[in-house]
Image 1 (tube, rainbow, N blue to C red):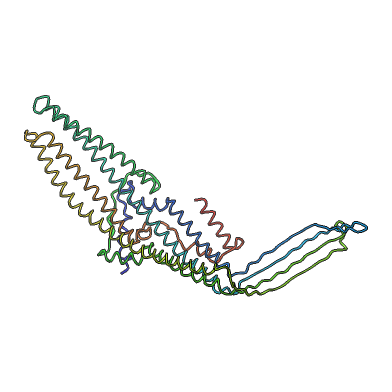
Image 2: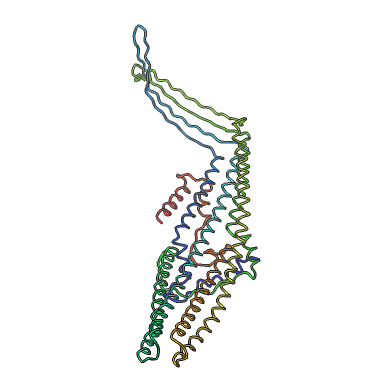
Amino acid sequence: MNYIKVFGATATALCISVSAHAETLTDALIGAYRQSGLLDQQQAVLRAADEDVAQALAGLRPAISYSVSAGYGGSSTFDRDTTDRWSLSASVGLSAEITLFDSGRTRFAIDGAKENVLATREALVAVEQQILLRAVIAFMNVRREEQTVGLRRNNVRVITEQLRAARDRFEVGEITRTDVAQAEARLAAARSNLAAAEGQLARSREEYRNAVGRAPGTLATPPGLPSLPRSEDEAVQFAQRNHPDIRRAQRLVSVSELQIQQAEAAMGPSVNLSGNIGLERERGGVYGLDSTNDVDTRSQGVNITLSQPIYQGGRLSSLVRQAMARRDQQRAGLHIVVNDVRQNVGNAYADLRVARASIQASQQQVRAARVAFEGVREEATLGARTTLDVLDAEQELLDATNDLIDASTQEYIAYYQVLSSMGLLTADYLNLGIQTYDPAAYYNMVKDGPTNRSQQGRQLDRVLRALGKQ
């Protein structure tokens, strides 16, 4: 079953704006995608990997170069008379060389570079998931801390009223000084908790700024949650086929196998074809200025060379064994990644189940605590309850409400952790409605190895200049 199609319809709910003036979760995700330096960094890593293909492809093409030299020198003869002979010389040459056959070494290098490009693309998707999940967590944490601060402020207000009432009752002799002191202590604790909540809100806002690229404004209520697979097993199966970490590890195994073939090919024969043409002029005379003694020399030639290493101290055999060891390393890494992805899916579903259970329990606790608080408060007015009983009941209601806020936040985060563990937390899947980075665009421009003077090379220069201005 293709969950990308099944889940995609429900993921569009992210684009619903709750308020025209409030900042939505979609806004936060778009900001994180556009402002992430980590994403820019990985895109640059991918472009560098694209260039490896062009460099490997150059091994199948001719290499052409020229040389120009000029010199002035002389010699002296000592017999009866000393004779000095000086000459001016200049030469120009053009040479070309191409590999006709190298036992497949260059072709393996090209294929390995292409596989590495595909692996780096998967790494880019993994980074994209990281920054989007971080934005979700930052958004939900700010909302949670704002609600917590609101609760704490209301708690300070309620206890302040209770302290005022306690002092009034103390003045008329209905309660003792102990009751007043208990209310004063609770008010001090409430103010301390409010200061701690405000500090945590400030920290969450800074994390939001770092994750999204700007300070949070008024945050809207998050949209409905996206759909998930019918079972955890289905999510695991989908993740094992589609998670970018697994696909990257598979590509790296392919790269290591091609490197083994490349190392083995280095032991085989190679055939190179080379040609050169040159022109040299020498002007003699006493001081090298006599044009009548000019000597022109022209040379040209074509050579074909067959070569194969016979013995290099065991270096080539060592390179093959080293490539095999790295292949085994990548295979083991793939096994580890598969297990980690399976575990991450299970952990995300466990967190989701815990959050759901916590929400149900917290809702019941809030209802019961509210009834208890109202009852204790009424009984206290009749003298059947102490001030401490009222303060305890109010604190239990506060704690239950705070637990409900936290559980609701964790449920939302757990949903997106499930998507991330499956490899679906991307801008395209979430349908953010923005232009995303095309990993194939730059590759298509450089895969044929264009030169700076070609039309495609000039287009590449414009692209690179544009990237440098970002």
